[in-house]
Image (cartoon, rainbow, N blue to C red):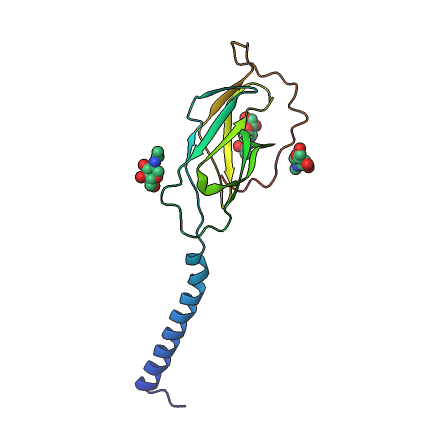
Length: 156
Ligand SMILES: *[C@@H]1O[C@H](CO)[C@@H](O)[C@H](O)[C@H]1NC(C)=O
Ligand SMILES: *[C@@H]1O[C@H](CO)[C@@H](O)[C@H](O)[C@H]1NC(C)=O
Ligand SMILES: *[C@@H]1O[C@H](CO)[C@@H](O)[C@H](O)[C@H]1NC(C)=O
């Protein structure tokens, strides 16, 4: 084959259109996948929950993608920088935007967050869990031992 300007041009045009098609087909699955990362609205920053109380957790479902990969929600409890193996709610419709939970008997603390799992695993602002009748926030070292940590903490 003799490389004239014309054949070279034809060659690169073909190559370019193949690459375009390749990147287009590669891009499709990414664009079709809608990861729903709803913002948690309650508990709000600094809210106080008493052990045993019922509380609602809400998140923003406005403008949720039309197709969600995983519509089944699960909410876990996070303390400090660790997600605890404490499930507050599960098997609810993530598009409902609300679920009611009973505050678990965990050690008092002001650095709890709820983690909403579905498509993603995002958490809300810090709130407190305290025992009824306790004025101050104490963090005794008891009770922590039987709560194992989750290792598949994939979201920062
Ligand atoms: C919920 O999300 C929508 C769209 O993203 C936004 O306009 C609205 O202000 C949010 N609502 C709250 C209560 O944050
Ligand atoms: C998590 O917090 C603990 C205690 O504050 C700290 O020692 C540890 O380095 C933190 N880990 C990460 C990954 O930030
Ligand atoms: C989390 O807790 C559940 C039930 O309490 C238990 O079955 C499961 O093994 C625990 N998972 C981890 C990673 O410790």
